[in-house]
Amino acid sequence: MCSSTTHTILPEPPAELKQSSDELTRVISKKIARDGPIPFSEYIEMALYEPGLGYYSAGLRKFGGDGDFVTAPQLGDVFARCLAKQVTQIGEHLGDYEILEIGAGTGVLAADLLRALQTDQPPTRYRILERSAYLRQIQKETLTEMVPQWMDKISWLDTPPQAAWQGVLLANEVADALVVERFCVTADGISRLCVGHDETGFSWHKGVCDAAMTERIQSVIANSEQTLPTGYCSEINILLPAWLQAVTASLKTGLALFIDYGYPRHEYYLPQRHDGTMICHYRHRAHDDPFLWPGLTDISASVDFTALAEAAGQCGLEVSGYTSQAMFLLANGLEDIIAGFQSLEEKERVLMNSQVRRLTLPGEMGERFQVMALSRGLSEDFCEGLDGFSLADLRYRL
Ligand SMILES: C[S@@+](CC[C@H](N)C(=O)[O-])C[C@H]1O[C@@H](n2cnc3c(N)ncnc32)[C@H](O)[C@@H]1O
Image (cartoon, rainbow, N blue to C red; front, top):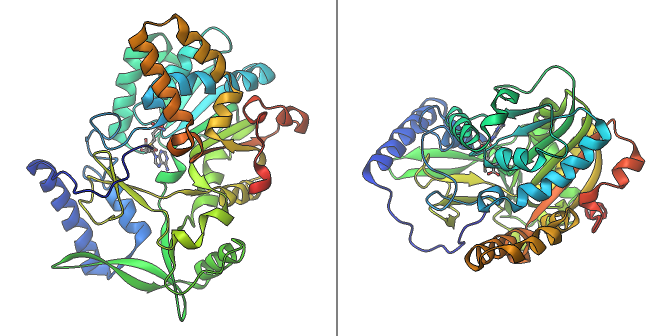
């Protein structure tokens, strides 16, 4: 996800959008009035997915130039063409294979990927597991327009597949969109941060962590190689193992690729990140107030890739690769793609070069984004030769 990170004054939303946000505020505050302060995870769940009103459920433009943020597939087709090379390697190894994409956004990654795979190693089918009914509709429109010849092989799922399948699972910028809990270190131990509401708006409340959550947070902190001082606040995705288990349970043989912004744990809970990694996006501005205009603002948190690796272990998946997005793309033919820009008109060449810079420069997506490959049923020898991880194997950092 890319946007300006200045905390400048945000542009005021138009009246009808403010109204929709006010309506969502009423729904959330009613729940708080009834139940008392709610865990932050419940607040995010409603802010993002409340039917008809949540950020991902309502019909607002989120991605691209006139949205709130830009993801790698939105920049152009370079990301998908590189990804296609990694997918092709798996496809050639498996023979018949499928793709399951989780959280497909506008559907443009699916379209560009299918175009890139069309001649060499096309999948037998492409399924999309998408939470947002509104985005499912947008994805259908995108795919019908861009790859009409593929429509009979593309389908949408409401819940993870049950029947065993083999192939590639893709999740670009999905793990960061899962709900997280926020916690704070206090003199008395760990507090779960909850959300209250009064006439001045939403506010943070220190709640009580149940024993299981306290134990989980304490073990993560102990394993982070950091001593977190009193007042340190951050996020933790308690539900990650259950979610990973659900979405990968039926993957019998193949590779799951998770691409997202985040860190290994020893970098996640650093002293300088004393207020966590949560980030909100509104109109290409990043800000840190999740209570501002609920339903109009995206809320996400960086991914703890060590937690993803641990969850993978619990699900019987092997961590077969971990590297930066820049290294993954370079190892998947980016230089050949760049060489092809020579034949383009100058204007087009400038645009393509700018796309590559955003995908790969360290201060853009190149090093902030990581790629993790989780495998099941593939031989160690094959996994050690995965194209995308051949330039830099960073698993030692997890
Ligand atoms: C930040 S967007 C990324 C979209 C797209 N992958 C891209 O790169 O442009 C997050 C996507 O994940 C979806 N999503 C979030 N949680 C999900 C879940 N538990 N299951 C399926 N989709 C989910 C959202 O609706 C949205 O499509």
